Length: 435
Length: 141
Ligand SMILES: [Zn+2]
Image (cartoon, rainbow over all chains, first blue to last red):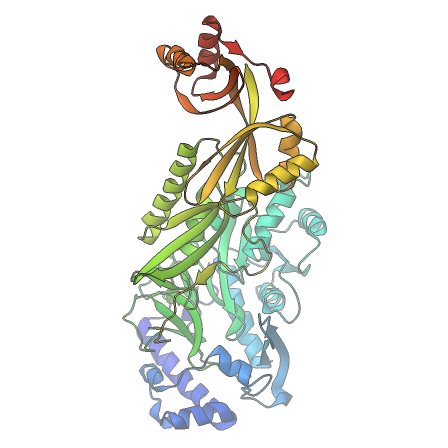
């Protein structure tokens, strides 16, 4: 099912025309209403008159997370406070959060985007959706909530936490879909299995998972444990919450609502757009946002874009799986290595725990690549030969994915840091002079 | 006879071996024999203790990677060639030794053997009248 066929199946040519018109409008808005944007454009020697089509976007300067922090809280607003009807904030890992302001029209665009997502997952007005994202400053809860209402479905605004109650409500109210983070879905799956409720008494069929990166291995795990189909919903606070993109039934990339959120992929070092389909840093321009438009916002996420029409019938551009963040990418002996790749290997091996720690160093002008892994209980052997064979096996599996042989170091159980939140998994001891 | 050996995975960090000895000591567990196999980044401590089950429990609760392994313990005279004759017995029956360690005291020596085939190993040694040491006797040393 497609919510807005006119836009979602628009020809590429028409889409580019629409994007060009909208880009011009949003550039005029920020230039005339937002001092930091105007200054930045003047420094770059570009004015709104220079923007005639979507191709002219490359003339515009980038916006970074730092710009949002420097202008905390409302410095980047391009609408008067009288038009701002809601704020959201991202949980900054250090210092102040990032605050965004939304107008009534911004909320309407968000609801529209969310409706496209839910419709693609096969949900409609007869369906009940349990929204277990947190409600509050975080965009997840209210974003998903509005999307369900927009398609005419029934929303259970349970928010996050209290797992036993989540299970009871899901069971008693017959939720067909669950919207939450993939890690919470996994947690819930285990709690559900122990809850005593038979699986067949649940109506649950669909998972609407986002707000954090997840791997294909995790998807399989969730689908298997919950007995559902799990879809990715993509969003980021700075651009808009959940609804910037979504997976269709083909699950061959995340469709982006590019009539509102224009994506580019650039070389993170040079800032120059890469050839279509190539890997690089994802950049968004919000084409219709009023409250706090983002012009060429650098996400630091690494991915690629697929412009071919999808088998589902949509022409909306698709984004490949996010490989990791620019900040996370390690270049070891000239090979790009992402911690997410290591994770995907480690998670599928039954002999080791899903925890690891990468240490990169430079010894005699050669990069060293060491990964500490914990052996799972029951897989420790009293025989040295077996332990060395296990080391080799882990190294081999990682090499087959990453293309580089790591030095595996087996460590004692629970030696590696466990945490609910973000875990530091990399130590790069090399000093780069060109940084 | 067959005795339970404690196998502990240890990182090559200073003090880890001492940690194990300390934990066992505080739990009132005596070590009868031990050996360490190691490579550049980790080691495997193999130890015969007075109370294997209890040792397993206390080490586990202290987050050590530990397991119990069956090994053979036998007594041999402390004379030239006695070990060789024992090894011959096992070799004849195609029982291979994964590892072994020994400790002698006076006239005799106790040998711990981890064979690849436990039953065949015990059988071969029994048939050749080798003195096997039962768990209870060993722990009392
Ligand atoms: Zn599609």
